[in-house]
Length: 159
Image 1 (cartoon, rainbow, N blue to C red):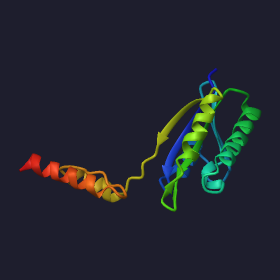
Image 2 (image 1 turned 60 degrees about the vertical axis):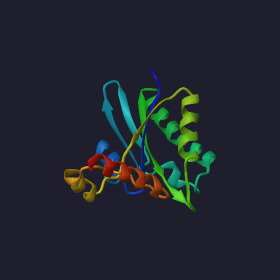
Image 3 (image 1 turned 45 degrees about the horizontal axis):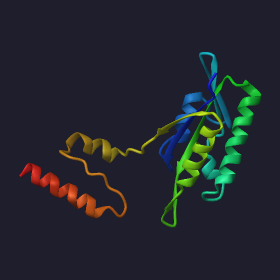
Image 4 (image 1 turned 135 degrees about the vertical axis):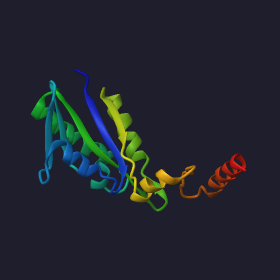
């Protein structure tokens, strides 16, 4: 049976914890499980390894992940799928890319099949605007020139 991990990635307050708690139907416990076929879906800890350690300390994040894996192995042998949140954060203008990418590569190198799901934070304004807009231009920090080009292209196309 292939060893599997599902990572639910998202920025702070994107709903990772509430989504995982709803998946395993728990409000207060630190661990939750559900049975799916021959496997147990195991959520060990609802906070992400990145939040539990100093900003972007890859070694500490890996150790945290290893503790989660060890717990699931003890409880369910190899018939489990570990599901855990990963938080995408930014400090001092730096995103914690290494603390997302390196642990994923590490898990893959150890024979795990890693599936990454991006839980994109969508606001009420996003939902409302989606219904009434003609075009969407992605907004990112320091991308105003790209946004201006996209706006210019849209205007040219619709003149």
